[in-house]
Structure formats: C-alpha cells, structure tokens
Image (cartoon, rainbow, N blue to C red; front, side, top):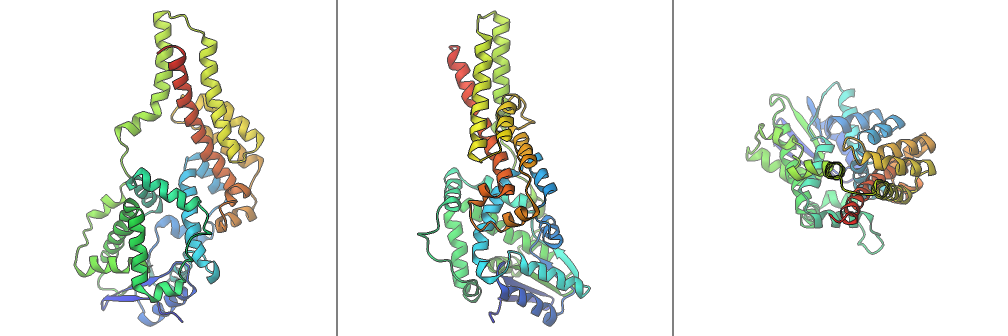
Amino acid sequence: MTTSPFIDISPNLRILGTAHVATASVEAVRHHIAEYQPDIVAVELCKSRHEALTSDRRLDKEGLLKVVKEGKAPLVLIQSLLAAEQRKLGLDEGQQPGAELIAAVEEAKAAGLEVALVDRDIQVTLRRAWKNMRFIEKFRVLKSLLGQDDDEEEAPDVNTLLDDSDLLSSLMEELRGFSPGAGKVLIDERDEYLATKISALNSEKKVLAVVGAGHLAGIKEYLVENKCDINRIKQLQNLPRKTFAMKVMPWAIPMLVMGLMAYYLSTGTDIDLVQFFTVWTAANAIFAAIGCILARGHPLAILTAALASPITSLNPALAAGWFAGYVQLKMAEPSAEDLADFLKLDNLGMFWSNKAGRVLLVTALTNLGSMAGAWVAAAGLLGGFGL
C-alpha cells in the first residue's frame, strides 16, 4: 500500500499529505489517527465544504434555486469544471474528491476528537484567483478546461504522485507557470493560510493536520521558519475590491439610455420614439434569447429571457438570467438522479444534457447575452441618432 507523505513539525504537530482522490489516502488518514492519537484533527476544509461533504448534500433543488437567485451560476460552473479535472484522476480509484477529508472528520468524531477546519472559504479562493489572473491566463484556463483531452499526455497515477514528491512539486510549479495569478492564490496564499490556521491551534494538544500533499512543502516552510502572521488571515480572506470602472460599468448603459431620453425631451429633438425603443428592445431580446438557446433552454425560458432582458438591462440589481434560469428550473425540473449525476460530471456535455447543468448554463449564458445586447443596443442608439 502506498504510504502517504507526512511531516512531524514538532512532537505535537504532524502534517499528513493526501491526494484528494486516492483510496490509499483514506486508509492513511485512518492509520495516522489510530497511530498518532491526536487531540485535534485539522482538515483542509472550509465551513461550506465541510457542511456539503458531511451532510452528503452537495447540490439539491433548493441549493440550485439559491445559486440562480444569488447570481452565482458562473462561479459554480467554474468550480464544477475544476472538480471535473480533479475527478478524472480518481475515477479508477473509486473515490470522490474529499473522501479522505470525510474519513478524517468521521474518524475524529467517532473517537471524540476535536475537528478544526483550517481552509479558506472556496468562494473567496475562486474569486481571488479569478481576479489575480490576467486576461490571457483566463483564456488559457477556459480553453484547457473546455478543450479535448485526446492529445494530452496521460495523467500520472495518484499513487505515483504520493510516492514521488519531486513529481508532485513539478506539477505544482507547472500550474504556476501556466497561470502565475492563479498559482499565487491557489498555492502560495493557501499554503500561508493553512499554515497560519494550523499554528493558531492549541500548541499543548497533539494536532494531526490532513492537507493536500501538494501543500506539504509550503506549509512546512511557514511553520518551521515561524513565518506565520495571524494578522494576515483577515487580508487573505478579503474578497477582491471592485475597481471604480467595475462599479460604474453596470450603471453605464442605464445612465446612457436615460440620459439620451432626457436629452431628447429637454431639447425638443425630433426623434422617432418607436424606433428608439425598438432598437433597445430588439437588441436586448435577441441577444439574451441567443444565449438561452445556446444553453438549450426550454422554449418558455427563451421567451422569458427575451422579455426580461430589455427591462433588467436598465436595472443593475436584476438579471435576465435569473428569471430564465428560474423558468428553466420549473419547466424542466431536475430529479434527484439528475442532481447526483451532475456532481460526477464525467464529461462536459453534461452541462447541456443534464437538467441541473442546463439550469446553470441557461442562467449564465442568458446573462452574457443580455449584457452583449445592452451594449449593442447602446451603440445602435448612439449611431442611429447621430451622436
């Protein structure tokens, strides 16, 4: 059996490295809890992921509706794509990502041990990673995730990863080279965050920390060299601030349209109001409908997207995709089996073929279409009326 790597930082602190999809890692977690006999088991989980894994409800109809209402469909789509890439390594192992973390929590609770969640919230990590990536990096990541894998080299076996620390390190560095912005957040920041949270635990109690093996070297460096600063936790938890341009952009189109109307009315300019509203309505409706069609939305969802977009584009607090996604959810309601299958995401086609995936796509692509339609409409109005 493969021996998962571990490091004893002190007599009271052991860091166990695992592969989130390896059967050997699940067995290693149980072995180290029994052999090391810790007082606290720290796991690489945040509160939301812990609740999802332990309750075995990673996605349900209520959760899907909440995602649609809160406008988080794009984030969930990216998260699903990343999970699918990780899951490919675990298909032959018969394990789902996070199986060893579940084992750590279950074994700790069964033994009456304290469980400490030491990871940063997944939504914060994803948002910070996306913000830190340059446009070309975002394009590369999306192209890689959506591309075909036929010409790619075969992924290394998970047991090989655990046995060969140099290979694991090279893969982590490969990610950094592929996307420096994402690498800084996904590797460097999380090394610091995990190490700092672990160091803040009661030093008089024995602690077994279960983390991804790729973080072992970084965590060890922070702990051994006493580089952990608890004051940095707050900074690392901050969501990226929106720039002035990002804050203003959602209001730019509504202000432009309202400004044009005010200008025409105040100056008495002779314009065709029917043409004015036709351009606005048609561009918004057509592009939002196209987005929904690309997601293979239900006919009523497509109609909803077309009707909602001209109105929601004037109100940044609303989004056409929310309404289209809600109608899609009601007209083609995912079953429990659909929801379970979507979590496996064995192939990217499931975004279209699976009812749960389609709800997310309808929401995200309708919103993109609506935004494009608003800008096209604004450009048409400025050009059409000689401004």
